[in-house]
Image (tube, rainbow, N blue to C red; front, side, top):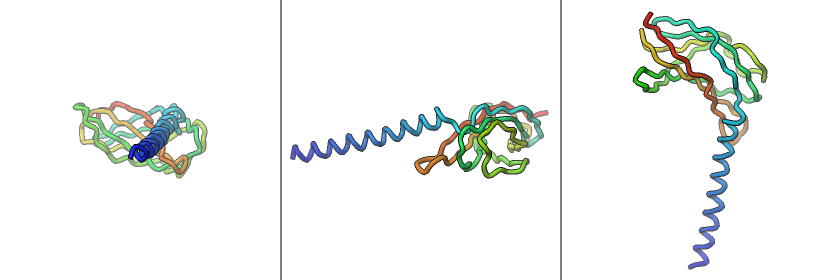
Length: 143
């Protein structure tokens, strides 16, 4: 019985170390080696129900994009996913260089204010997807 407990304990320890190692590697991958860096909004125009932005960024790794998502944060600090539309030509994959992006349209509630956070997901390898927070910017469409 004690021998069986030692075997189970050994496998539990090995499995735990493998899982912990994978989690640490994933964190180092996304935080230490982001796919996109220096993402800046250089122009913003507001309309009653959307915000249009464009800017510059540097893509640092050659990974396949999976999508960009936008979250609207109200003055009460509640996050809500909101539609994002590429008004420029949507690019399947960008080269790994400094470049311009936009114009992108983020839909927001009519006559509102708050903050928008943009995220992008990439597939860099088969183990996991890499998520990068691009930017957070404030807006006010109340005119």
